[in-house]
Amino acid sequence: MLAPPPEIVFINVSSVDQEHQQRLIELLTAATEGSVDKAPGFLGAFLHRSLDSMKVTMYARWASLEQHLAMQDPGPLPILEEALSFAPFEQAG
Image (cartoon, rainbow, N blue to C red):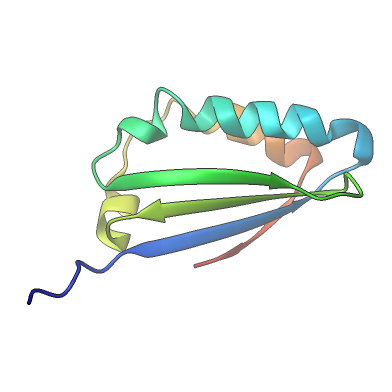
């Protein structure tokens, strides 16, 4: 039996003021759809909002770290820069 290929998961937790939580969800969705989701090795992403509206967690799966690092599409950068302007995040992989 073959072992499944290695994959990597990134978990980003963003702190956000309550009034900006929905905007952050919209920006992260826009950065993923139509760009990141087309990158070789991208397996999927899920967004979770906290009940207190002060955090957003993004869980993204990649087939390998190398494929994640090789993603060259600059399209999502302005969107992510806007998100980071009001919602810093902590990344764990």
